[in-house]
Length: 228
Image (tube, rainbow, N blue to C red; front, side):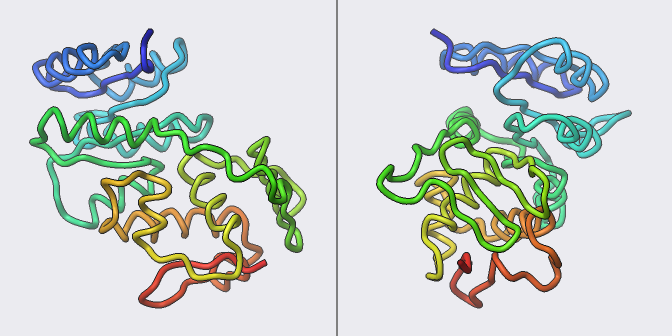
């Protein structure tokens, strides 16, 4: 049985071929696209669990493609980039990617990123409250529904897992490393920029005034806290 369907998007045919072979050998179904435009067309016609998306393509680049996909889907997205600058990594995450990997990368590193992106965090303890409210904010941990400002909010899987972990540990500072390992997995811990970007995205979606957050609070030098 397949572990998931993955779409590889890269304008280099050799990279697409190697990545498809690697994914198939690990039990995944894999398709590929040579451009952002072709990726969007295939994505609309088929269901995928993950998109491996090259950041630096001609025509419609990875950032633009990622944003277009994110307008209507919460599919897992891992960006592939040859640039190692922090601003480029943040640009990938800010466009809606769940993770990124810098070229050249090894097969084990790629597969670790794939597993992290497809990782499904088990539901929290069933003996705790499943619906949590604070002002105009409400989250149903069981059905994974979030409402704010009187409307339902769509979150990506990683955004939801991050929010759920903080909500499940209210009013206490949660350290950066603990958050990263709880949401992305045990191989993470130093990627503080992930949290900065994702917390910023969550604030835009659930806070009345994202520049003056009342729910998702920063604990300087430590991590973040959900105020209930």
